[in-house]
Image (cartoon, rainbow, N blue to C red; front, side, top):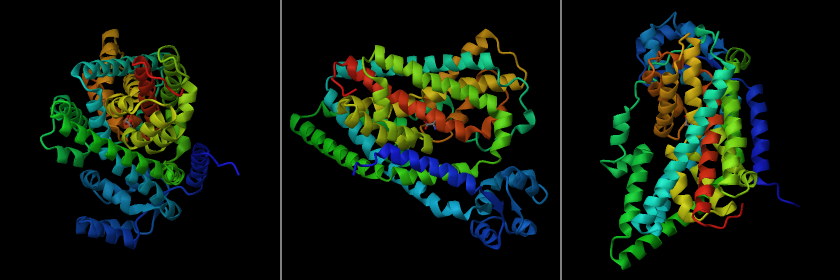
Length: 470
Ligand code: ASP
């Protein structure tokens, strides 16, 4: 019997997950057990007594639940304990039976990332060898990333100006965003943190730029030590890398289950999809149309004409990675799969893959760049602020910076909106306006982020004279 290919398995899991999520929507209900959980979580006892009055009442929509909480707690109290209360009141047995599969899959992917990045990048840089080659490859890669991100932003700019989704948007739809933006690092701090003061704590915190910086440095100086040491280190790093890739291939086998668990939970947690669509439909459509054009027209044209490769064959080779990007909304978590697809299926050398993809997962986010631009102008339109030409240029530049600075994790792009809004003097509360649909758009933009990196790997490999399988 012919084997049912992995990407078909993932697609089936994906469709089943949507059906499951729709059949079992999440509701919110404080039960005796959830009140006890809150107590164990050091939730103030006097508030628990207040919340007890809500015991047993079930709410289908999170916003309604939070609204009723207002009668029992002050705004301040809700704000500081919102996450705890919501997770205690989370009520969805059918989804909790299966969501652990998604959690487990994500944990396994995250487990792989750091040793994979370190071993592949350090070994890759060591094999690139002389500083001249490294400089050339670095410059080429970064220029490619900046140019494609700018094209993505301009695509977004075009559509948001044509479709004008923010005109007449419902400002009452806005949600609280405090807490979300407080932990934001300044741009100066981000630059400073590229150099880690402690590489182990950088690894511990998943500080990607710092890990990349250390790995590149480590690989580079391998070429500067005595030959016998250099050989031993390169061999060891390559061996670790091979093992990590084998673990990746093992984890990928569970992707259909992981995708099922993640997607079912995301779908079931969406509050009132119909209202969301009716209020935010045009904004979502603007972002998605821009992303689709960038994915299916712009990048394929670049791969075809500049990379002299077959873009849709390449896309097909990456289907497991792209589905995983969509479900997890994390470029970092997808990295093991994209490296596997680019190297094993599309035939890009390990030297290029291991340099271009980890760097891309961190600084190259075509989808996020496009989204930042559309969202900022949407907010301006919604608040009735006319954006001058110069302001639109500032948005383009800051959207690029925000996409470079955003981490490859869910919702990072939303948090980075603060940079763009600040730069043109738009109210930060504007983020509340787009919060409700962020998770959905995050899934789409992450696919484009990952696809952009993978196209970059092909174009750079071809420019270095490699023969590929696409
Ligand atoms: N989630 C995106 C990523 O991991 C970043 C973003 O939030 O835009 O690529």
